[in-house]
Length: 266
Image 1: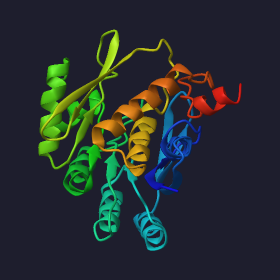
Image 2: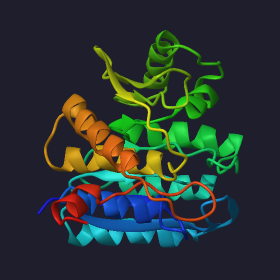
Image 3: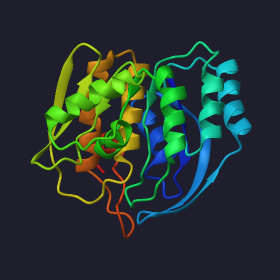
Image 4: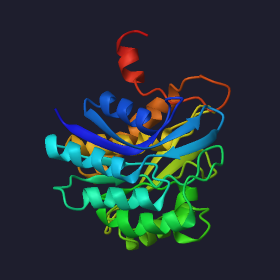
């Protein structure tokens, strides 16, 4: 069985973070493991607080897994402090590293800032060079390049600039742009591709970024190349949003096992 490791924060309401990542890995038939970077006080309405793990604990979670288990892909999500970023880079640097998908989680859907400017610089300096794929949304891409993004053409320019920061491949997610369709821009350093999907009329989109990036990692673990892996992940997240769950008083989660439930007649 293929395996994947998520290095990310824990979401207490289960729709994002390592909970979303592990569900996504399992939905793809990939065995999931986790290194927890932080515990959040979070529900569907907002993030109330974050408690970081000690950097040594984060580093040791990663290294002990690589010492024991063959890992076919790594997904990195929320890393809120410089010391955590350094710990992850120190752990991943010396190992026989599989492809890494980095989701630069900076701001929660409710507006909670999860990454300081200094930590953002450390993320770019230490983790971008280790990443096979970086998956910013529009807001994160704007923060990374210091420019507004309002068009697909500007998304292409942002993808080039983010690649120049050290990433090998980039997916700029366009779900926050206006329009009837959501367009993602993919760039591998040579070719651009666009993936389009119709918008779903739902507020229940908690954890979409985490789920999409972990679906990319799962598909890479299964042996798919970059463009094919992202296309499969896009199909998966679109289905998860279409079948999203109306749980809680705020933004409910996507349905990670929608396909299995459908096959079971549920």
